[in-house]
Length: 157
View (cartoon, rainbow, N blue to C red):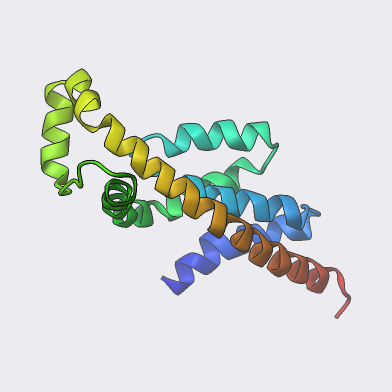
């Protein structure tokens, strides 16, 4: 895993920095890629990611790479956001059963959206609240890290 992270994540980012990429923009790509990758609506993070990265002129490869990297975290947080949304914003607190959700979605998309749409919206509200807190902290962390890496790469040995 350590080798994978070094070769597939760290090396491309440091390569971008050595080619003159702006640490702030790269940090924003990593931060927003991670946040979009955890949105509690399965199957939309790539599309939203493309739109966000394009609108902000961010590095698409870095953005989507991080988005895909955090996919397991999206699956872990999905039921947490659903249950927290129900608990904090009122209404039904859903028991998370992926097989049941999949079967109901495949049976009838309109019925699925009618039954689970509000619960999903509440989960997105909780995710957005978390993103507003975590996002600036992640951005600050990565911006500082990338500036330091960038400065170290520019200094002669």
